[in-house]
Every structure is written in C-alpha cells, then in structure tokens.
Length: 271
Image 1 (cartoon, rainbow, N blue to C red):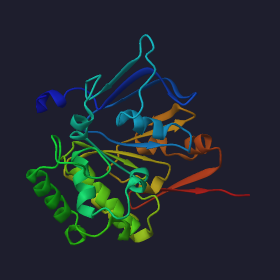
Image 2 (image 1 turned 45 degrees about the vertical axis):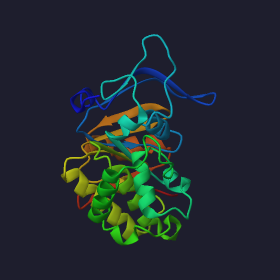
Image 3 (image 1 turned 180 degrees about the horizontal axis):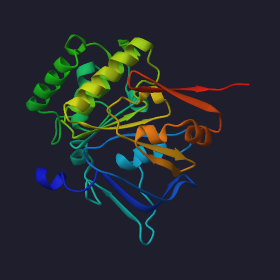
C-alpha cells in the first residue's frame, strides 16, 4: 500500500452504526466524522461511549453489519493492523498495565513496530536494525535514553506513560490517540506529559484526546465532542461545548467551568 493511498479520506467516518460490547449496545445509530489534521477532545462521563470509540479506532471493535451502516478509517473499510499503526498511535493507561514489569524499556518501545505486547521471535515481521535506530532516536527526543535497559516496572507511572508515548511514535504516525493521558500521574508528571503532547501538536501531529477531565484538554484542541449515554450531546469549539449547562446535563451534577491560562477547569457544586 502506497503512503499516498493511506492518507486519503477522513480519519474516522462512521454513519448509522450500532456497536455492541457483550450484549449491550453502547453506540446506537451513531454518526461521527473526524477529519485528518483536527485536534479533537472526546469528553464524557464513564459509560458514555468513549472507550468504545477508541476500540473502533484501533480495530478492537466493529459496528454491527446493518444495512446503510458506513464505517471507514482514513477512507478505507479494512486495514491490516500493522499498516494502521503507521498512521495512528495509541497511548492509554490500559496498555500500560498489560506490560510485565521485567520487560526492558527499549523492548516496550520496539514492540510498537509489532503492534504487540513485548518483542517476539526472529521470523518475518520481527524487529529489524532500522527499527532499533528509530526507537533510539525517539528515546533521545523524549529524554528516555538513560532508561533504555531499565525494567519497565522500575519506572514511575509518569515515566511509563512517556515510554508508551515513545512506543506510539516509533512509526511516525500522523495522528496520536491519547486515552486519559494524565490518569494516575502526580502534578509534575502530568504537566510533563502535557508539555510533550503540546510540542507534538506544534510539530503537526493530529491529536485525539479522550477524557472526562477538562484539565487534560490543551489549548491546541479546536473541537470538543461531548458524549452522553452513547450519543453526541454537543460537538463544536471548546468555548461552545465546555459550558456549565452542557457539562452539568452530561454528568448529572451541577458543574461550574472556568478558564485559566488558556486551559479549562471544572468544579462540582455541592450542597
């Protein structure tokens, strides 16, 4: 597949799709389009459908094959997962928990080339010398080189998150999908991860940030999609979506939104 062919079409184009997790229809007759090059935040409470959307993007879930349903990634209905990873990088706390504590940091990063947990075998599709060169360059860029041969489990949660960011970047993807990027991090580590994410956005990488925390939404985000109960409750610029009324309705509690230094924050009013 030529690189030019892989760049055509919107990042995500889904129309009238119903998606089940088990016997539960999480998304029903769901329609959403996200174009390449957009910086988007997908916001909503637990159970709103955020994780289901991520699993659609990384091909872990598929919509039911209803008549009239349309589902394409980057203009295509079908993808080899390795080819897709060259276009879309994923970082999540869930992925972080899948790695065994004894795995070397460098092997975690190299596993991004195999779309796997760990590095396996020497057969076709295994790690090649050029992969090592690229992994080493990304580790340098993210100031991880000194940790290359440390066990993953010896790292702080913030360092582990940066290692997974490096794993996602080895393919030089055009889009980065971040699922609650600062979840479980202390203030300093969260600020460090956010600073690096903003730098990547400035370098031209598209961002899809999935969260229910307003402070995880950097100023580069141009569009916010608010989910509630598997439906889109609001979709538009941050100033139009991140309002007291819309967030209070989505989360079922009274919320006040405020801004500081181009960032949004929220507080819950209590009696």
